[in-house]
Length: 312
Image (cartoon, rainbow, N blue to C red; front, top):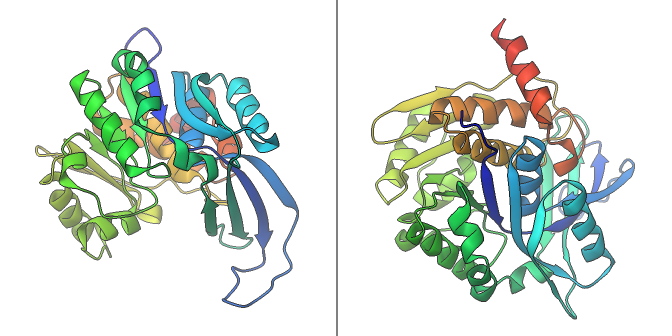
């Protein structure tokens, strides 16, 4: 590991999570009486930024918030987590993004609807203003809850600055080769990998097939997260399976964000990809043992303690 803190630049979304648990996920047309209501900071960009900050990285975010009460809450949450907000803009007359989340009280599985709001107004000019921040970073981390053209432009700027890019392609959608060519580490879950490749993923063999298909389109590495099967990391030189850690899951919302934030930190500290994925998998495992998204992301000492315990 390097001596200084890794510098992570997150370009992405913020939404306010509005969440309740339910005895089961409702069917179409069904009303289900749920549990207590929770509200907190969310959105894939914000979650990943806060996750990385809690693990000890120096993190800045480029994001768009509405000039409303939710936007104020969002801004304060980022500041309290130690995330740099110089790249945050406020948009007049537009609501801050909202995520409506239902969590199955038994399995911890979830359903999420995102109303993007101000996230749709994060544009290329905002990224251009963050050009120096991108150039100084060890890694740029992005997702797909902001306009695709903004993601594509940011990836080009990062590559011009020789700053590696981690792209979490969520929510899943087909992606152009021009974008994938500027991505260093692509981190889809199995559903997203299937959407991008058209390959049905049912096991490790089909996951490897999909990863190699993606690798051929440009990324230097592909890491597919597979829920209970763990993760599969594939480069042109190696394929490594990282088994999942056994924990009692209470809420899987935000697990992928904890994984991506931790992966950026570990890679920023120059850990090999497989070891970085194991660190990220531990962070994700710990995150599902608590309710919430960014609030459930673990701190550095908890991840290190957990890894020591599972090695015994």
